[in-house]
Length: 203
Length: 236
Image (cartoon, rainbow over all chains, first blue to last red; front, top):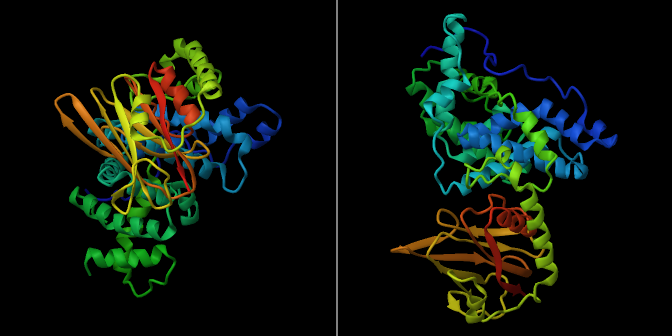
């Protein structure tokens, strides 16, 4: 698979909010906790849901876990101390809940099914340029390769490069030392590269 | 240069070290790979997902979604709200009225507290030597052994009701089978002073949450399960 000669763009999801359109904490300060959570969902819901889908490899389960994340946020946002961003705080909750969910499945963590992957990056070949079809296939191949990684490693890679977190933030979210995360990420990248190349990617 | 070597310089880079000694041709594929990961789109949640979350907020007594039993989806729980409320009240009563927490329970006493069906014993081991279920010290190992005819879950909670360890058929401990009989052995090194509560969860589904003792017990009861304190170990 040749890398599409286009600038990579997120083509299968709704537009990403550049920032929280409404400040959830301001709404909270006015006393409307539920509206604050609604604003949080608008700003970060897709990212949290996406993180859960990738961490769990199961969209239906991710719906439940992501819902639980925001229920916990509703319960605890009054105690949010602004030591991190709301996005990092939410990813921290999501990380814990996803780990719980993985454990609860009694090591039955299954790989994201091919049809689920296809659904994540579905495009209509007749409606879009060939470059975007190739890009969707590349994304699907990458999702497949990510699922080859163990859960902790996958979450680390996604938080580092997809969420753009610093190692300090990742340490807080994943409750792991930065040194361990450096090693985790640096070992994962060659594995991902090899996996993608086996699927035809030519960097 | 081989991939293990890639790992080495990638680790240097992630630590913030200078990697100018690595040829650009070696770095470029990883840069593209990272750009590709960064560009991965977040999958869109179902259209009604936000509405379901906000509706769930309006049902504060609802338990956490049972990720251990995915068939029980939150949005299908409209009927359990009252049950959950009653369960929460029962838990509060249980905490108020429960007998004083036994300390250093003899194993047989601990077993007698178990519900019908499963039997549970606890003991303390120090340096590989059994010390019965007497006082524990830092570094000792608390060993919880249970036998049951159906799946159970053992959980340990600390002083502030925080989770320490859990053990079920698939996670956290050794399980052996003899016909329908299961034997669970949970071993936990005691790393802090204070109390460790040994809890037995039974029922068709165990709460996926592992946050706080009271919340987890409420969730278990909401699903028609049971949660009982088996023993309390004091770590000196």
